[in-house]
Length: 268
Image 1 (cartoon, one colour):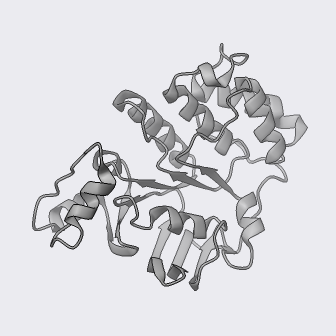
Image 2: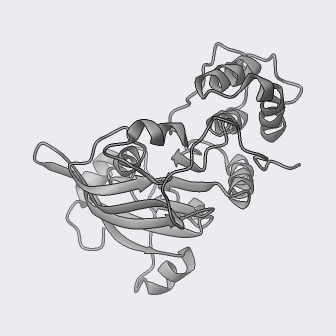
């Protein structure tokens, strides 16, 4: 099954003033009062690259992505997405990106097709191309025979695939995914990543945040974040080799309490 985006949607996205990099950040900082959520993040992401933000909850991943998508204004620093400035051209950025949050972003009381039609209208997909794009999403999500099914009845893995299809229905050059497979079983997660690879192969730049170490391995490059700071940026293999000690991942039913208990411990 082919899931490449195909041609561009006329009038849907714009050509920014960009070079080879699809996303740039230079000293991006966000403070909330005296608290620094993101501290001077500098990085670049190439077109067609899958770039991951890896770190624990509270590391600054989501806030960084919100600044790059124009949802939150930076306190300091500069950023560009698809050639548009995050501080002064946020509307243009939102027209040229897809965004899928960690919370399920579709309307569960609508059918599969109604959700697709809603997002085509929201993103301004021309009427002449809507049937084609609707069929593309249904095929990509594996829901060709489920178009009239109420979305809340779908298994979580299919909901996530549908949400991904709706996020890129207008064929944006840049896609942001904020912990998109949270709560999804390993098989569904692998299937979801096959779709992400297909989009990247078609030229879409993908930025994804995750706290799953095994999921981070799928990215072309990774940015390690902790306490608002960018610790390192490299390929997953290079980052593994550069670490002097093994990484241990602890999963617990009370993560906030566990995190508080080890706060300030060296190496955590």
